[in-house]
Image (cartoon, rainbow, N blue to C red; front, top):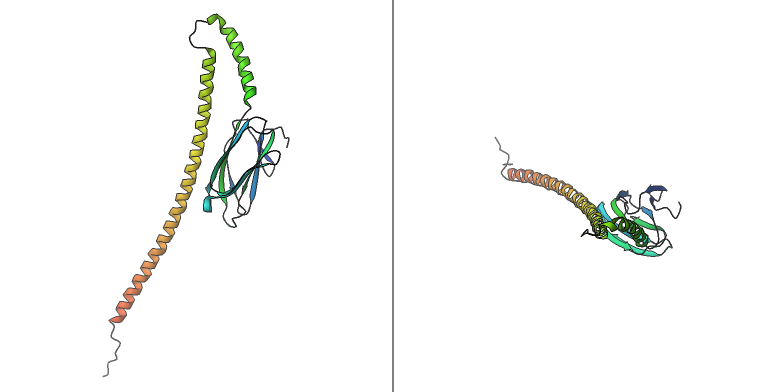
Length: 225
């Protein structure tokens, strides 16, 4: 796929296009003995944050790696249940994220990950300066206003960034909740299974004890007439 296109795609060549900064979280099933890779395009001098969690499967662990467009291995983790990594500033090109479950032969994993992509700040600042100049020119006759337009814009931008961060934190908390729920359901299944096994053993032992006690009091002597 083109190197300049900021899109997300799975290894089987299925692009998931999203605007920068608005990439949706991805949850997928990683089969046992498999390795899946994803690519995220990014411009230069930007910020890319990758967060992942294993929310289902035995062990709740997976191998994770992150490579730069030049092929440099930035992150390499083994048998981890979660992680968060930030690349800043980024290189222009496609970053490669891989999840490896080849160490597991029978258990598939349910993996959640999110990519947070921020554009380069210089272009945004230039656009803001141009827009600010136009706003200031229009507002020059209103010099008596106490609140400057620049202050309003700065407050709105701060609020927007905090809201975006709040959304990211809520998404991560939902992922933690899903992982804990899957773990609790798995533990509940195990508890129910072994409880049934113990109950069956108790019933068998009770019948054996009754039989043994009954056999002790039986008179097996033969009566001659």
